[in-house]
Image 1: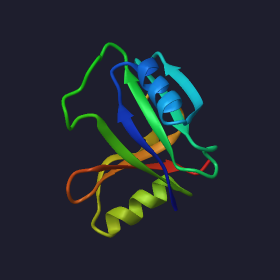
Image 2: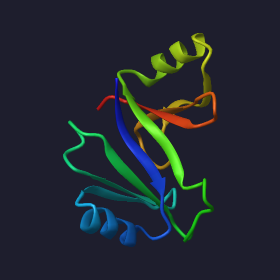
Image 3: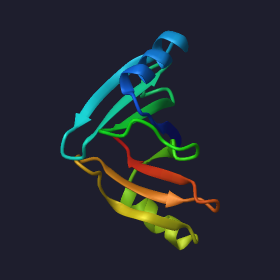
Image 4: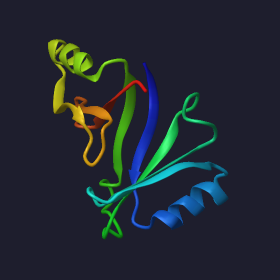
Amino acid sequence: MRILHTMLRVGDLDRSIRFYTEVLGMQLLRRKDYPEGKFTLAFLGYGDEAANTVLELTYNWGVDHYELGTGFGHIAIEVDDVYRATETIKARGGKIIRDAGPMNAGSTIIAFVADPDGYEIELIGAR
């Protein structure tokens, strides 16, 4: 297992990309619109995603700001089999808050787990 990315919700995607690339020196690795879900994802980092943990910026169309505390999204962990991982987590007493299945407006298999404090952890199937 390894940490894949940390997701932050942003109110102005272009402004945020400029900050992370121009101010912090990250590279824009990929960006994709999801019209059916009305959101855009941008992934940034200091190296490619295969070998590095990266930052995921999520822009929900039409939302220009968030209250403090709602900007943080989740931590993502890659697993070999999301369905098997959720069953193992359930058996160990973990709380699954979104069962394994395809992501909204996409085909990647994901699930979400809540930690004891309620922070969300996304399980993503190995690519």
